[in-house]
Image (cartoon, rainbow, N blue to C red; front, side, top):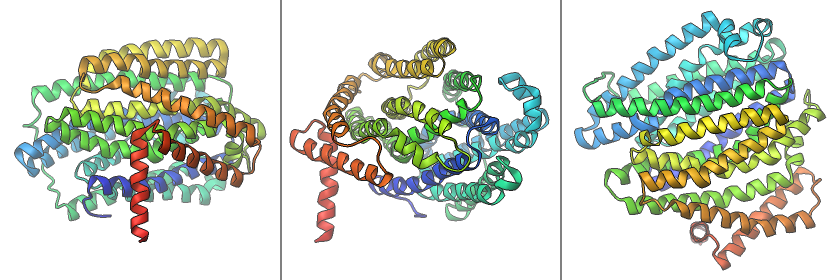
Length: 509
């Protein structure tokens, strides 16, 4: 695992390891629900962690869009050392920026959070330890994300995941050991310790395994790079404002609602984190190489095939989650301090927001291919217009209709973006990408799943023990794969899974 890997091997190994790492992360959330349920403590924890994650995402947004593609081009044109100096410059800048964020949050946490959130000063003062400990996380997450992304461009797909897995294990261990003594703060104790170890392991690996030199240089920061960085960050700011607006809207609702939303999102993100994110990360590197070699037809082929295969896996998950939301939520969360009322709130969010997954899948691949084609800066006005209009819609409808309005407006905004806005953006920026095919195939996959959804709803009772639910899920996927093999609704998925079965049969022989 500590060596470079081919793309095919990289996808298999990194996806498998990523499943383990994300499973530990999901287990962390399950244990939090077990010990603390839905309360002001969990609301504030999820709010702080979500805010910090958004800050880190805002900073690291430059990586995939500008820094890594430019570094890969430098490696091709000027050699390994030039790319390393370029990467090191941004690593040093991230370090300085992370230290600045830490100082500001550490000394002014209560007044800052009272100003930018709906939580009152007395509540924040009562949780000051939570605020102070979390202040170092932006620095650690920014650096960890950056080092991991750099290693991925060098085809070290699994080494970063090993380090991240250790970090998540620290967080889980701390929660199990110290939850009685430190409460929800125990999560952050383990998380901070885990990220420190994570960064140390990544630096150790880069210095000793890759012979990474410590020098940096700004001579390759051209005007074009500066322009791209500025435009990308403007777009990232628009996305940050949109996501933070959602946090503010939900955190202003009654106590426990924001925690319930976060618990539901952990389930919603299972296919995104376990499969889509890692497959897209590997595919994104391939997109960068194809773009550098000016092979647009091949980019289009891989883009369409990747989305087809991922949607063929994601849409059945949505159908099963819709049918058996109660079973899933009760199995994962309904124990300890987690009440039946809290479980019902999580089920309500999950049953409908799960249908965001296809949009998130498509958008993940869209971002990767636009980034590879260096078109991210040109998408700014599309991004800005969507984020402003969607956020206004969500705020207005949520304030009028509460949680129900939030769900309706979220689904409407995302499907409008994927099915309308992206058609025009690809037609303008990358016309060789046949994006309307994505919409057609997504609708076909939904239509293909409707008869199965109805049949399984009629045959099987929705109130099932978890082992029966798992058996039903296996049966559902087997049915759609077998029928698809004969009628070829999704040729890419049939070809992909037929190849896997063929290799398995050859290995047995």
